Image (cartoon, rainbow, N blue to C red; front, top):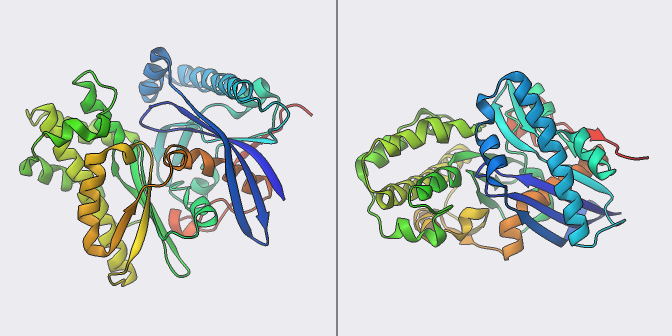
Length: 365
């Protein structure tokens, strides 16, 4: 069976809206895919600021932003279809939306009204991919492991370095995955102090010095001591982690170097937790690294150094996978929802059972 889907992803780092038009084929339970077209549309500053401040809105303003952003997503999808000449080729849209609130076990709110997307595009839409898992007692995150298992069977470790870094491990008969720590969202906030939208190649961090006192403060946060399943809200990076960095009085370069080291150490610690919980011994494995942070050469070099003792080799795939893996997987989750198949691992999220999450908006008959 062949499926042609647009996957839409807005990451917590607010670096833009990712869209991928993907052809999936399933034969005998095995999936193959081809990314036919992709694009990242940068947010205009006004919308970016609205998304940044969305957590502080009054209820009526929040509802208005949800609708406005849904129509915006629909408009950008139409633009993508025009620019990539995809008219009459798209069978389904799967939109993750933009996360504003994430309280594991209570709620997880992604704005970008699915009905508004369907109204703009006149195409079937799957949205609200996390809510059912949360209602079943799960974290609602991570939701990418199902896609990783089906689309990248040759890897056992997966690391995505977006606004938040998350890790997955595929074992024999189980799958572990959880959010590790804030990543690009905090790094980008630091880079903005130097009037850069991000620290290109990690060049600023590379000339900074790691401050051990600040590093110790960062590493002592309660979240890092908790066992998984667990997941993070953006507010942890913005309201807890960033103020620690700002209060340090260090140069921006030293803050960036120290925070990059913190990310690398927490990824190493996450692997140590997996090894301990699963009684693993050192093996020769490969870890697929994706997300915008994969382009941060300094950060990747520190991660590589810290995971090497576990026998893990860091692998950077082709550019399209680095940049659009999450949009690709959102597209697949939309297909699984369409097929009424499970979209999450309850063992990963902690839900009482697996589920096929997502709301349908049928567009035009």
